[in-house]
Image (cartoon, rainbow, N blue to C red):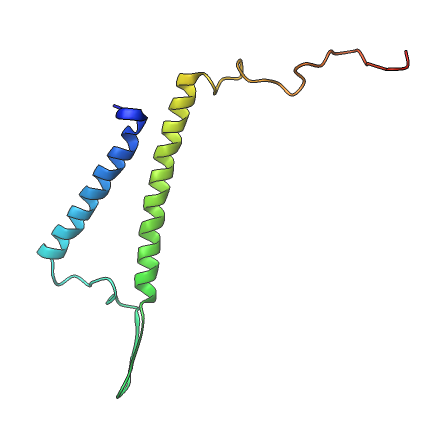
Amino acid sequence: MNGAGGNGSFGWTLVIVGLVLAGIGLIWVLAPNLPRLGRLPGDIVIERENSRFYFPIVTCIVISAVLSLIMWLIREENKDVQEEAKADLGLGSKENSVSPSAGRIEGRTHDKGE
């Protein structure tokens, strides 16, 4: 199912990201009473007479965890695609790999003096 140039996995990644965004939009519209990002319990808000200090620590942790999960999933998918490509090209097998001792003749030394 690769597209032109073999970028089929990128296309599927875009489709998945689009579906996730659509799902978030649906939740946002259908459940307006859910805590919003930036207003989660645990976010620090200090209000004084003339100022407000706001530090969304829990929101930062949630966003970091979600982005880390997404990046891990993308890396895992790319790892699978790379392994399939190597197998298709025959690069992953030991039979085609060059050993470190290739080109050396075992048991012989080359001395210029003799």
